[in-house]
Amino acid sequence: MPANELSKTFRSFTYSKDTFLPKTRNLLVESPLEIVINREKHILIMFTPEMTKELVIGFIFTDGLVSDISEIEECIISPAQKEDGGQVIEANVSISKKNSDLLSHTSSKRISYSSCGICGKENYCDLSRGLNRVKSRHRFSMEILKGLPAKLKPLQPLYRETGGAHAAIVFDSAGKTVFHCEDMGRHNALDKVIGLTLINGISTDDKILVSSGRASLEMILKTTRIGFPVFVAMSRPTSSAVEAAKFYNITLIDMAQHSNRIYSHARRIEGFEGE
Image (cartoon, rainbow, N blue to C red; front, side):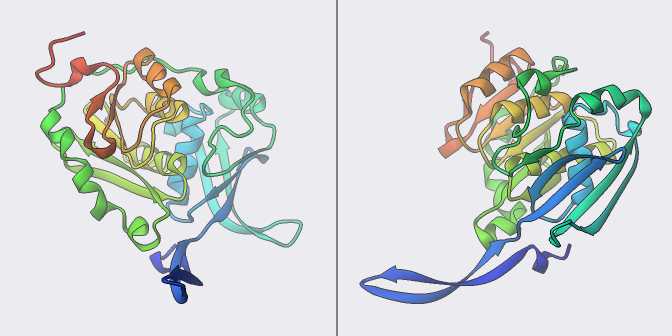
C-alpha cells in the first residue's frame, strides 16, 4: 500500500491558554487482516496495511505452524468482503500436510489486537511449543549497541508522521541496517521483520533485533524461534521476558532512556568477563 494510504488526516482541537485551536493530525490506518490456512479461518489481526505477506509469513512461522518457509506452499493476499458488508484483507495460505496436526490444534478462530499478540491462545505452552535455545557464539560490541537507538528515527517514517507506530529493525554486528518495518503493533512489526528475514534467507546468529517498544514474553519467544541472539528494547522488559531470555539463551538489553541495562547472557558482549 502506498505510504499516503497508511495514514488519514483528522480534524481536532488543542486547548491552550483558555482557547480551543483547530488542528489537523495524521493518524495510522488500522485494517483487519484475516489469515485463512488450508481453507480454515485461523486468526483476525488488526494491523497497518503494508508488508502484508511478510507479516503473514512471519506470523505463521512464529506461531509455530511451520518450521521452515519451504513448508508454506502458497500465500495469496487479496481484498475481501465480510458477511456484514465490511472490508477485510484476506491472506489465503496453504501449508504442507505434515503441519496439519499443529494447525488443527490451533484452528479455533482467534482475534489478535495489535497490543495483545497472545489473545485467543489457550496457554503459554502454545507459545513455546517446538522452541530450542538460541545457538550463537558471536560476540557483539557494546559501543555499536549503544549507537543503535540514534539510528532508529530515520527508520521510522510512520512514527514521525503519526506518532503511533512501532518499529522492528534488524542490524548486523557492525550496526548496519538489514531490514526495518513499522506497524501499529510491536508484535506485528516483529513478525514483519521476521517474515523479511525468512523470505530473504538471512542468517540470524550474528544479527541484532531491535524493538521500539518493550520486551514481553511473546516478543522473546518470537525472537527465539527465528534465532536472533540479541534483543534490544527501547522500553523496560517484563519479568517473564527476562526469565524467557535467560532460559532460551538470548542477550536481552534495555536501552530505555540510555540505561544500557543487560538482563541476560552478558557474556555475548565483548569485554565482559562475569557470569
